[in-house]
Length: 470
Image (cartoon, rainbow, N blue to C red; front, top):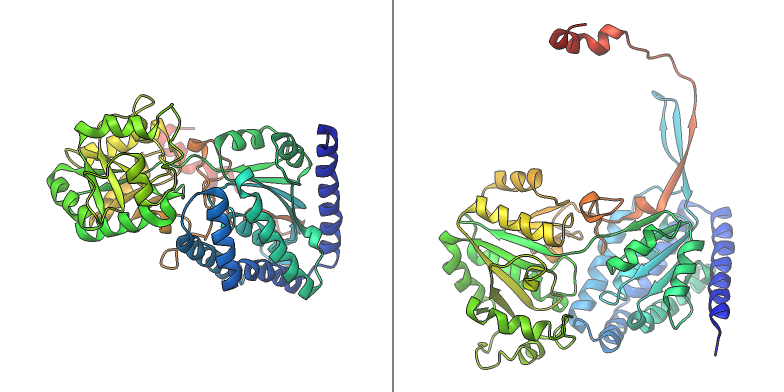
């Protein structure tokens, strides 16, 4: 059995090999070389037979999600990322501006350390790997314990693709299994940049490890359905998003706030989409079974609807077409766990008197959990999206879209494809946008002298002097 000292030494060896490989990769770098490496990693997960095998392995070893949706996620998230980076310049001169005299040179960051979750043990590592390689970096992954088999298999596929184009396997590695906090900590310390998706404990450790870090905040998506919404379309979008991969996504709806004028009609529309209503009177029983010992019931987390219904003892009441349940509630805060992230096919359902009240409810939910991440709005009034964006602590307002599909980038919106959403200062993060390729790149600037552009005092202060005097 290896000692703790041997474990740390093994991590240090992995990091040393990654650093040597990265230096050679950069020394022989070109845009074509970086692009080919990214394509190799993308094809490693997108090739249909490997994609299916990875999805099956992921569900079998983590017990989270379902195979069909993981296949879709692996494919579409990677395809979208490859579209996003196709024309991105990440080598050599990327900007040359005669007006400012500045020439900007793309430079790799070095060795990226990436902590990745069990909810997406294939798609999230692939996303990070592709971005790292596109920008001339090496990358070392630290998967969650249950995500180790999928990560190992993914790396095998990537290395097989590397062999076809003459790339060093050491450009993409993982912390030697079995994982541990000590091993991950040493990886964080030896990296040039840390990227963390997963538990907030991991994010906090990354921010305090002494290495520049990008972490993402907690999800707890709340969505408003107002009186102007197309209720059938809203119900269909929410159902599709909520049930995708059994709600493993941090962008999956956890609460829906419906204005009173359309509440009953929306509940009916939700039922048409397989959303079974649990009345407020029965909510305490759901809470008791969903958090039997103060922690989320593992028999419910990211499980298929049938297993979820059985674990929550809802079989007698749930209609045959039930895909998820919507539990009526009014409570918000630590004493009301339904107001938080549930990682399951359970939706909290709130009734609001009007849009203003709905906005207030969402604000209270976000102050409890999920600040900075995103909110959704189903409405025909675009001005209401502006109101939410200007008043709520959120980095994204997703309008009339299936939230889990739209937040991390979709082919019908302009968000970058990503599985990691920055939550700004509200979520304790250093970024407020979707993690994407630009975060894996740094630049050196050549600064030349230009003609002086010094303004007069009058040009700067004339307007101020008119108001305040000199």
